[in-house]
Amino acid sequence: MLLCIPEVLSKNDIADFRQIMKAAEWEDGCSTAGSQSALVKQNEQLPPDGETARKLGERVLKALSANSLFISAAVPLRIFPPLFNRYGSGQFFGEHVDNSIRGDYLTGQRIRTDLSVTLFLSEPDEYDGGELVIDHTYGRHKIKLLAGHLVLYPASSLHMVTPVTRGVRHAAFFWLQSVIRDAHARNMIFDLDNIIQQLVERLGRNDAEVRRLTNIYHNLIRYWAEL
Picture 1 (cartoon, helix red, strand yellow):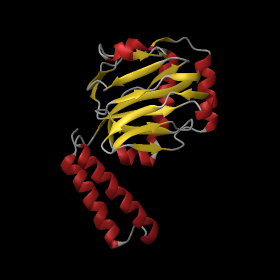
Picture 2 (cartoon, rainbow, N blue to C red; picture 1 turned 45 degrees about the vertical axis):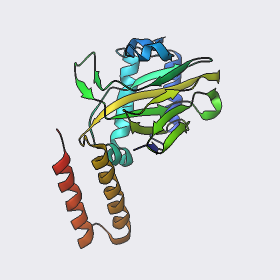
Picture 3 (tube, one colour; picture 1 turned 90 degrees about the horizontal axis):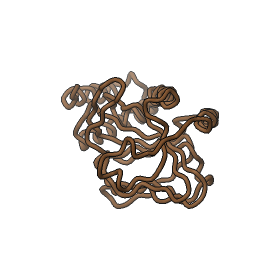
């Protein structure tokens, strides 16, 4: 699954985030990279355990909890506290695969990284370069979204951020463990939910066929769920 989700954060949210980040202290982005990723990573990030990152991350998680498309696609069990990075001129993140397990320094919670998330916090015209490039089942995809939009993709994907040649690229990034570990099963659940929602619009929730499909949806989650 590679899915772009629009307007997770409003323009007012983005302006507020950017003002807060502008006044914050930044550190070398390699502090949260694995040994191999650190060799190809050149960017800066907000200290993961700092108050600024934690408070902004809580706001991102609150927005995600209210986003039905995100919940439907990811079926999240645990979400790693969002991190925040910026890429200035000449900075980049070469080809890499995200760590399979991530641990939160403050809580000690560990998650299996099923899906990766990048939430764009800069408008595309604020910087050149800085595309998120993802190798996926159907080829290589270049992603550069409006501020407030996010992309959800398999954490197992080889991906990179191309060098920024003008301006500064800001983003939040994080990972999640899904209730449904198997990616193929998760995609089928997402497709089924989309069909149910379309039928609800046409027939209403009390339609007999809609109720039957909804029962099937929940029984499939019950069958595949890992808690």
